Length: 160
Image (cartoon, rainbow, N blue to C red; front, side, top):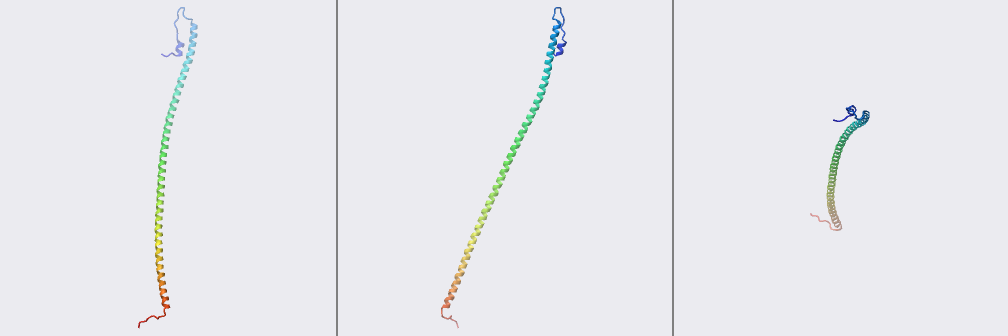
């Protein structure tokens, strides 16, 4: 059974002949009651303070848990955003490479087409030169024959 300051204060001792002096015992009991009461109040205050600190610790632990969860969520989100950005960057790079490949392929096809046109133009030019040379040679031969005929004093034979 716990002892309280009131228990000490209300304690009565039986009286005997030649016992302790009652005034000294009462004075000592009053001093003990005062000290015990002071210690008892201090103990109650300390217990209240412990409860308040335990509540505070509990709140801090809850906040710590919440902060840890928030940090984990933030880290996961950051990782997801980073992965998404890398994926998107890869897709953009692949699209750019595909476009560049298409542009190069188109340019190569244009070069091939222009070379074909150039070769065709060269063939046409050679054909034209050949026909023109042939025409000129024919004309030169005709003129040469006409000049030779004009230089020859024989009249042309007539058939009669």
